[in-house]
Length: 80
Image 1 (spheres, rainbow, N blue to C red):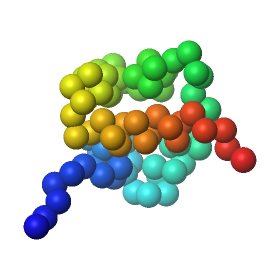
Image 2: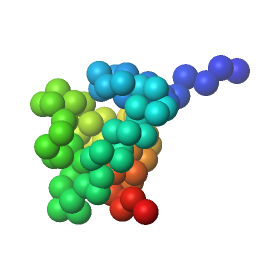
Image 3: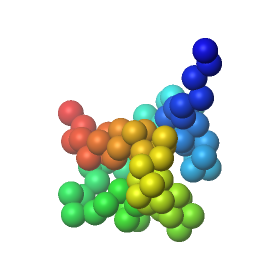
Image 4: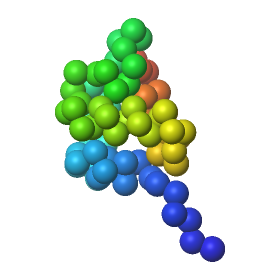
C-alpha cells in the first residue's frame, strides 16, 4: 500500500520554498529561534499566502498539521 501522507519536502514545495533537505535545514537554522509569543503563521518571514496556508491547515487539523507542528518545533528550538 502506497502512503500519500505529506512529507517535509512536500510541505516546503507547497510553500514555494526550496525543498531539498539541506535547504530545509538552512531555512530552520536561519529563522530560529521563533519568538514564543508568535504563532507560527505570524512569523515575519512568511508571505501572506504562506501564512494563510499554515493557519488554515492547522485550523482544519489537515494532514499537513503534523508536519507544520514539526516545523514549528524546529523553529522554536535554540540551536546548540
